[in-house]
Every structure is written in C-alpha cells, then in structure tokens.
Amino acid sequence: MLSQIEQNQEKKDERGNQLTTSLQNKFSQYPELMEVASGSSTSRCEAFINRPTGKVLLEALDFAQLQFSKDFEAFLLGNQQFNFNDRMGGAYTQISRMLAKILWSGEMQKISAIFLNQDNETPNFAELKLLAEYPNQDEAFCALQNILIQLLNKDQNDNQPSDIVASKDAISINEGACFDVATYYCQAYEYGRLYLKIINGQRFLEKTHGSHTLINLSPIYFNGIQLPKGSLFTTVNNDEFAFLRLTPLMFDNRQDMVSAFGAEIIKTEDLGGDLLKIINHDWNSY
Image 1: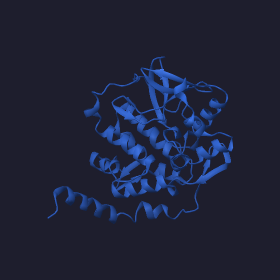
Image 2: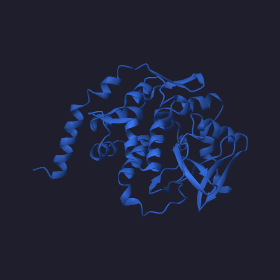
Image 3: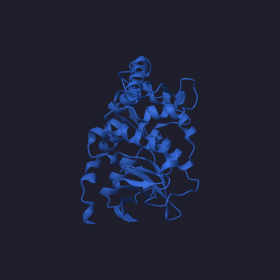
Image 4: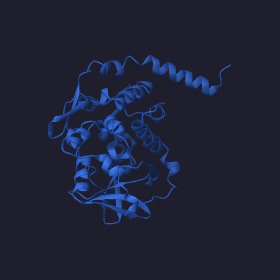
C-alpha cells in the first residue's frame, strides 16, 4: 500500500508525464535556433531552450503545468520585446533579475512577467512550489529554484539577519546589470580595477571599471534569503545594497556558465576575457 507521500508523488509524475507534449514539444521545433550576443552578431551559441539548463526549465514548467508569458516566449525565440531585450541579458539573466525584483518589492505577482499558469494568470503558491521542487541535477536551474522556494517561504525566514544591509530605496534593477557583466569584470581584472572588499566579514569582488558593482565570493544571507556566490549587487547610499541578478561567477566551470548564460560567455571569450582567471585567482592572499 502506497504512503500518502508516494501517492502524491505518483500524481505529480502522472501530471508531468501528461504534459510532456506541451512546452518541450513546442520548443523542439527550433533545434537550430541560436542565441546572439548583444552588440556582437558574431558571438553566438545554442539558444537557451536548447541548452541543458533551458531544457530542464521546460521539463519543470510542464511538470508544474505552467507556461511562459507571451512576451518572454517571444524573447526566447529571438524577438526583442519592450520588457525583454538582449541588452539586459539572456533568458537566465532575465529570470534571475525578475527574482531580484520580487525580493526587493515583496510582490510575487511580478513573476507573471515570465511565468503564467494554464489560465494565463499569475501562478499560485502550489503551482510555483511544484516548479521550485522539480527534481533535477542542473546546477544553474537549482540555483533559481533555491531562490524561488525561499521567496515563497520568506515570511518564515525573515528572522535571519542580513549579512549586508538591504536597501529599501527604489532603485533601477538594471543599473550596472546589463548583458556585459562578464566582459566588464574580465576587463576590470585585466586593468587592475577589480578588488577584494570585506563587508561585515563577507568577501566581495568590487568592480571600479565602469559601473561600480560587487559580486559575493561565498553565499550570503540577504533580505531574508540566502543568495549563492556570484550574485551581483549595487551600492545604495554608501552602506546599503541591492541585489540585481545572478552572474557566471556563481560557477567554477565553463560548462555550467555556458549552459546558463550562453552568448554572454561567448562574447566575453571572443573579446579575450577568461572568467576562470577570476575564479581561480587567490583572493585570500589580499
């Protein structure tokens, strides 16, 4: 006799299997689709939906009976939209930026800019929980899931103090967080404009080439949730901070970087950048 947990899992499996003909089949019609880097038409790679992280996302959406918004689906297929354009990053970056907006505002309905349920409405808690708990081993997608499940349970986690002060001021979530973050950090490293900065005992890389931003070198607690290493922050009022997006520096290998960030990595490499130099640098010696 099946336990209640096993019965629930069986129902979920059936639900997922019934929907494998939806998003996965829909996007399988574009096997040759390419992702082109913003500002560099020669820097390109497989489209996000054809890379491992994108494929797992499609599986998870089918499992949770969710779909993309029309604007985000058009963006995935290479069409620039008012709300989504490649100047502000590829699909993975856009999803992480949306999660940053939810963290700052506390408005979960903002997720409808990217994900909708089958009624074309904002997904409810149960639907988003299925998305956040879809079993997989893709490191990039698991990072998004970890943030999402914490946002869903944020009221229970708000007693955890932030390692750095979270700003409550209105900010532009796009400030310093464009497509070329990887390129700018590599350039800063080569120009000697990337420094180790300690804030409340936490280690960050501070970029002073172009927009001044920071990336944490280890996971930190911020505004009620834990963010992975490689998260991008901007400074507000000198001693407060805002989370902007995830970056390729959350990974320690090129394969995961490309799976998530795609053409952002290819463009960086085409311009002579090497993110692994930054990752493998001994910042502890500073």
